[in-house]
Image (cartoon, rainbow over all chains, first blue to last red; front, side):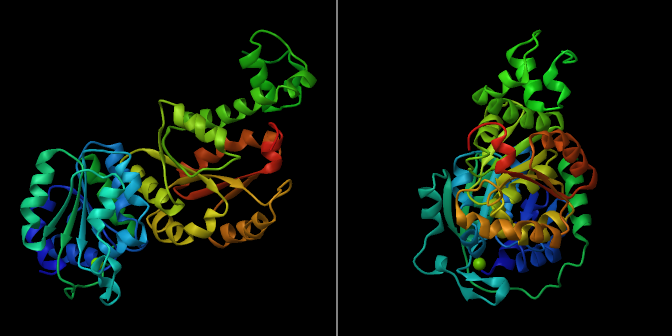
Length: 184
Length: 210
Ligand SMILES: [Mg+2]
């Protein structure tokens, strides 16, 4: 499966949750598949999805799911020790690990070669680190949500992108409706 | 306590105010004596800065280590009103602050001016693009009284970069400049912008040895 197929499958789970979605094609795909006010789309700032979602999870009680990528985690690897050492159980970091920088043309990442992001997360001190296959994403995510424990999910999947339109919504609109969803 | 009788407050110097109110409640002490209480006055300025953060409802602070700001960071850490989360890099910290603000808390970041070089993209595409407030309390290394030459290399770009980014910038150079902090914080959350507060070695030197 490629990322967009996974997102289609888990859209019913994501719909009712606060979601922070990684820059580029992941956000375009989620936006096209199931746009919700409770989705925060990153339009720029490579690497910070996990940090934005984590700051949000730390200050309020609702569950927060971050849809991140392997390339993005590699860009902001310092995020994992911060997450590991400041556990908040309403936080789920889902790393869609397709072994490539999808938004820039599927160039290979080191996560697709020798580097295991699950092993990195564990070495950083993260608990409940689960590496799973693309076809198992839905049940694994649902179980993580139901557990009420902070989780790091590494979803191994195929490289590739769906052709989706660029998000033209104003960033302040994205942010404003997201903040209203947080408070709702 | 009203410090009307204190000759120190005639000079409008916050250090004396704090020495007066904290160390010697009810007593008047001369400036020259207060000046010698370096350890105490350092503690007081750190406390005063964090008092201003708390008074402005800032409850989520991320920091990277800094020698000049060590006392402020320590004070942030012990306050019950503030959740303190050290970050590994300043752009990561700005991501945390963005999330915290969207979650309903007022954030702040404490960092060195070298971090301006690290965070330009984040400031432009996250903090400014989504129009979010972010007070940045910055140790301004490489200014007057700086002992390390390499720090000057980033110092000479700091204000130019901030100006290019249209980031409101305040420079604390003298002890009394701290009196503007409260207004600067109010201004930041009024306009929803990142705002820089540069604090140089001369500012901190007024409160003790560097
Ligand atoms: Mg990828």
